[in-house]
Length: 303
Ligand code: GLN
Image (cartoon, rainbow, N blue to C red; front, top):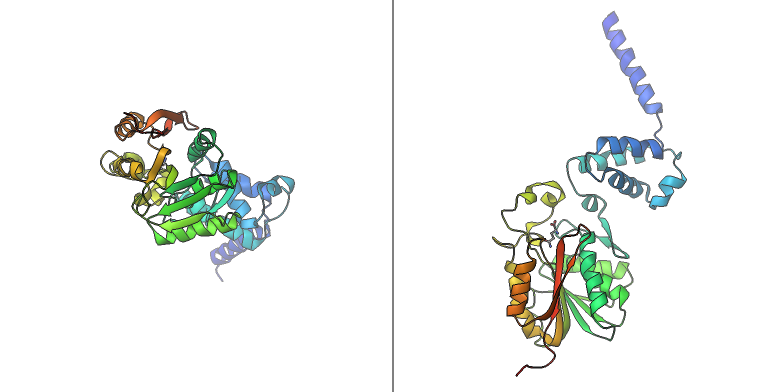
């Protein structure tokens, strides 16, 4: 064998031996992953992905920083990390997302629940009396809003509606998994299938982004279905459809809570006033942006 070939083989071998014998520990794996990720949530993303690989809660990472990763765990972690580096949202990689006090399964057919939507859940809980009520979540997706409300108000009759059959199945699975099997989910197009004057509270986080919004080409939203994000040239098509039909399905005095874009407050307020809603209020999300507007119908006909 020529000297140069021998040298090359030996170099490869020693590199391989060094690599193979290098056991990565939890703390090192996290540090390495954070250095590879360019997302602003690098630390949180690395922790969630490693917990997913190890099938352990977050506290485990900090209790056992010296715990070595097996070769299989290390390979799995590298594969998940490569997907995140390409931009895929963590919630689609792990198939899970925490929302309120729930653990929800996610799917690329529907929106990933956001912490900002907890603003809507809080607004409902703080505004609506605790007595038994009929409440419907339109475009429920994973079931996040419906299930969070049901977990806080066990005596409310909560129903979630979604246009897609596979999303309805996902929400049902999330209800079972969180011990909230009494929440009903059905397929439907906004208020269309609902009986006249049968609902006390309508809630929705509908699509509300303008179809030409440049943000749709950036970050995690690129992986989410446009059916869950966009709604016509001004982003208000679905919000208009919901507001227009809300008066038919709500009982006298009934409430409507809508999540909307940071710059859509005035439009939503005007649309709701035109539809007869009163006592309009807007709540800000965690980033201090207008995010949720709500109001109620008059309790009796005004003369
Ligand atoms: N708030 C989400 C976003 O800007 C959109 C959610 C929605 O369209 N309902 O990414």
